Length: 382
Image 1 (cartoon, one colour):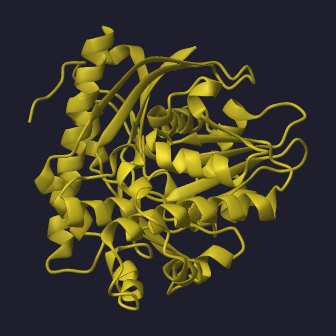
Image 2 (spheres, helix red, strand yellow; image 1 turned 120 degrees about the vertical axis):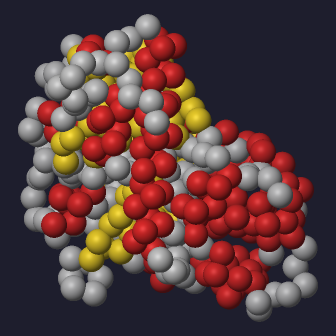
Image 3 (cartoon, rainbow, N blue to C red; image 1 turned 180 degrees about the vertical axis):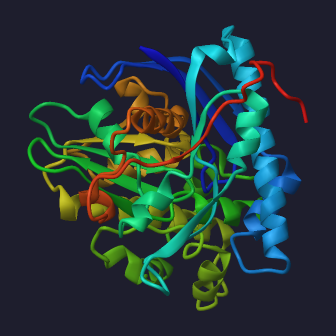
């Protein structure tokens, strides 16, 4: 057994989740005991800059480099807090698996390889914490011809598979991704829709809040059937996997172009329709690729949205719609736990990707290592 730290900051831009977890050596037991969890929101200035860097702008290289430093600082201070809460010394942690903040994701475009960009100064994080840092997980899969995403299905397979049963795992972050765990056959996974990204942007622009708490605003509106048809006509939904996406596609501009066709819609009705897009995109993907699914586990921030959970259950009454907590993992810890797991796979020099999921030419070790400082475990303050 060894302790690992997982750090995740997703496309929702709500901040950073950190978990301290005890993992086995990959011997097939699947042991994963969370020792502690901490969350830290991004400050508003950093959140605004990260959101702006999702789109072309002035002086991008300079701004992105400074933002990567600030993400590392946010990560480092959260690591220090979590280790303090759990009474854990840096020397007790084998490695940190740190995702970084995705600001562009354009696999297989332009030159055939494309790129994916997660902002994080991994060297600075290693310098702050004096713990080995594994980061930049997605680039190697792209180099092998893959999408670089999603990377969590291998972890989902170890943690959530059930013998003799088709299980689906839906992560509702800023972007929604789906893992299909069949009773027999290969694991499948792909991004399936916008998740919370469009809903959060609409809520922020109309109500000044970062998200629709419990989905109450969406629940107060009515689905606009004509708008729903237009939104679901997006070609991404019908594309066959492997596939992945991000704010490069599902952003405020994408939504505004389509809303221009319906200028009289009430804001609450738009919100209800955006929620329905997230739900229908996920359920349609399950129906197409694993129609015998009878258990849907939902993780990510969207698992706390009662309206989304109710709509998933109402539209598929024969399928049990459950939080990942029912399978032993709190929804907002799933992805951070997955990146701790991916760090362990890297340290053991084992593949972290599933070629059937990402489309890569084969299994690959994922990540880049920034070793711990040689000068002792004390945190460096900045």
